[in-house]
Amino acid sequence: MTVNIYDDLNRLEATFRKTAEFAEVKEAVDVVAADEEALAMFKNFREIQMQMQEKQMQGEEIGGDELEHAQKVAQLAQGNEKIMNMLQAEMKLSGLLEEVNRVLMKPVQEFYEKL
Amino acid sequence: MTVNIYDDLNRLEATFRKTAEFAEVKEAVDVVAADEEALAMFKNFREIQMQMQEKQMQGEEIGGDELEHAQKVAQLAQGNEKIMNMLQAEMKLSGLLEEVNRVLMKPVQEFYEKL
Ligand SMILES: [Ca+2]
Ligand SMILES: [Ca+2]
Image (cartoon, rainbow over all chains, first blue to last red; front, top):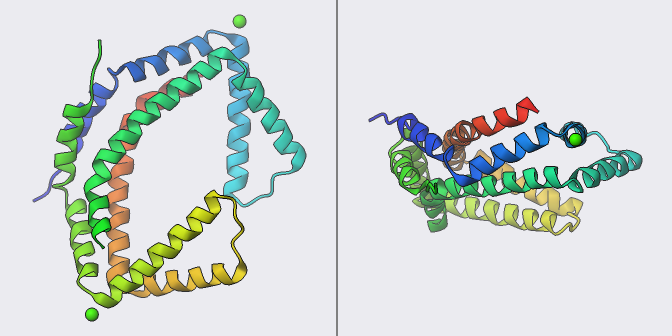
């Protein structure tokens, strides 16, 4: 028996896109996109975060000055209400995704708990 | 409009449990459970991994001897065919879960890509 999950997954995805959490992220992103200052701040924040992640993954050391700069940029971005609102909306949506993962992995976890 | 994802999620979960990937994990766990030696090895491996994770999360340092011991236990467990088979089955199932996450997050990622 070969089962494929795509019919059910696509149905879930369509419903996921109709949730309040999803709509809030979309709206919050649009608000940031419409504000040049917030947009520039967020792009800077995102770029530096990606640079740091890349370095970490490659095992490169992150200098003190660099870390300080990254923290400053993060603080600046998080001090912007529109960006903060967007990050919070994103976190709420992530919570929904975690719930999906929790429900799907529960039976697997139960196998392992029996060991 | 309030939408809840549980009907679709529960449907997906029922289908997820019918996949070949899920059945393979269940079977591989049963095989380990039925072998005292493999079971003891796996439990030891899991316990040490959890201890290490806990220390990392609490920012505690992990000593050289401790790390060496953990690596030895991991090597021993991974050298056991039944455990290795179980870990590989688990990885394949994780791939399915990653696909679920990828499909659900694709529209969100597209918002961010537009920024
Ligand atoms: Ca403006
Ligand atoms: Ca035996």
